[in-house]
Length: 237
Image 1 (cartoon, rainbow, N blue to C red):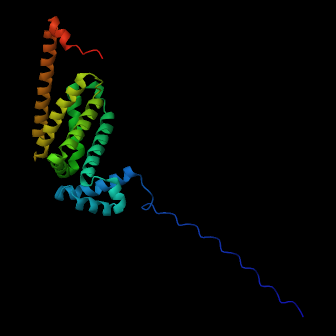
Image 2 (image 1 turned 90 degrees about the vertical axis):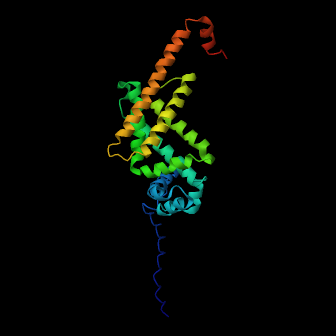
């Protein structure tokens, strides 16, 4: 008997290559994800404030899972506000670093730092006002103070401040008052050119400069009295 012809062996199908993730599905860093959520939240926050529902809605629009949203914003809406402030500070530092601040007088450096931060907030002015209102509540007062300190510290550093003595704290305390009061004036400024805010800022900086002159003259006058001069010297550690 003749041998039956052998059937040709079937080649095993090559394993299918895994589908490449789309650009939308590619993993993002936590920083990028937070930025996406913030960008989605700001238009809603302008009307509804920074609430749990706004945070959840923004997370859904940014394609962030509820688990990731809870991980990235552990404190909920107030955590989103804190990130909003930090990201605004970072953008402010970036813009100020691109300017030739060294060619300006110190009062001009401070004025432009305040203006720069407000200009970053301007596209979402109402959302920024809502954030400030939330931070003014007693339960968030400590966080509000911390965020203002971070902002004015960034402003002074951008302005070239290198003080490490008591002036380090007095400068930041004074600027916190200037920035805080100017921001409140700006939130209520409905003029097209925002000149009232500009005038208000200029007046506040004038007050600071007058105080600095007074402090300098007082220090000079006291230096003529050894007892006061010794008392004013920093204590040795």
